[in-house]
Length: 310
Image (cartoon, rainbow, N blue to C red):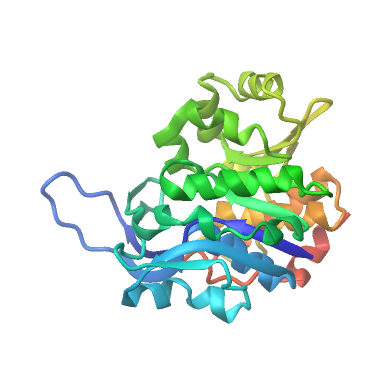
């Protein structure tokens, strides 16, 4: 199956701390690592490892970080034909500081990601794909937003319309808020977490938020609710799908778990799984991703997902 993915690629600097530092204080991490990351890169890598033909549209700088940011993309066999290099910008980096009790602070540099040039988007790449997957970070600003909107238009107007999956992202909704509503309601499938759905809709409960999205025309939504799993919603059904805890493995780092969830959800839907089974598989994948430090370190395999197939 062929996927076209639009999203960021980053170098993640991850610090595990006993507590987040107060202003002016210096703290020493329990663990510090540098890993390739980014929503687009992580989704593309996950799908490629599941055996799909994946093309990633992203932009990097002409700098040493670019090679590292794309290292897992390359090793997993993702096509780089839509990767662009922006000489005047740096490859994006993200600093993540998190504690064992779930507190997290991030410093993000959009860098080259926001410079994805829409004039270089090939219509055929979208039209010949089985699904288009967009990280909502791509919809926030810059020429990257123009690129993503152009791809959405190609998908919708293709002779055989291409299903569209959009994953929201906390940074995207924090920056754009309800400004994203017209974009994301074009999705055939929307994935987001409980904070994001409330911020996107300006409501105070998930049920009210889902009703709001229904009024906007959305029909299939998966809301990630942390340790509880996810809520799968359609106009005719709302169901909580329990989280799947990895057997004999400990959760170490949630970086990239949500992106892994979305990639596996798309994989499951496009390979014929009903929504509830797709959500269960995605929950399992997100849980497994969290057993490694870094967004792309845990390889999710078809064998991992087999127990959750309908």
